[in-house]
Length: 318
Image (tube, one colour):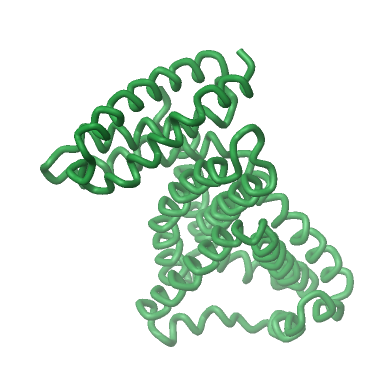
């Protein structure tokens, strides 16, 4: 079966089902009797289309679109009257989030490369010539001067109070993740900027640290929270890139439909990032600036990083 023929033949029914589900909102009571019958018919047809697409077009984006559409229809028709928040939350973390990540891992890999390549450039150039840092990022020369002087500025966390610092760190990290995600609407330009800028800045600091024999101090701070925090930035950046790609290259889907599919996937990822960023903020405030041995901090990083990636890659498989 050719994908374009299948989509062209069924598209009107899918769009009509979307319209009815949007009108229904939180209750089917807003639909007329004729619309309810039409909703039931279109839902059953969409479920059949999903089965066909999974069988004949397993790698095509239309599978994700139909899966979301049928899930919406099922939720509207078979909605329970009682509270189901705990069940929905459990389903989100045991199934929806890891499966969505695995379906979109390429976007996360691209986000990582966009971060890593400027980081490598910043590291090599600053290690060879620390004075060049300000040419890349205005103001970076002040951070390089702190490194050259051996100032561990992150120890100020201990002075201002770790609880306050934790709240500030969480707010900042969540802000960076959301900006990387929302930047997808700008055709990915702002997402690219966020990833490249942060990568370049970290590379500059790392290069200066190795140049001035400050590496142990720097990694002693970054190690504990780095695995979780950087992973989340890559996931959030990948979520933003998915939306921009849907706008630029919708494929056989309409641009609106492709964006809906990408936005739903991206929203699942960004919501899943929030508790991870809270965890990273707690580690960064309470463990990273502490006097714990470097080996302990690396153990924290290895444990949390391995746990996160095992969860993303293994949990929720059928």
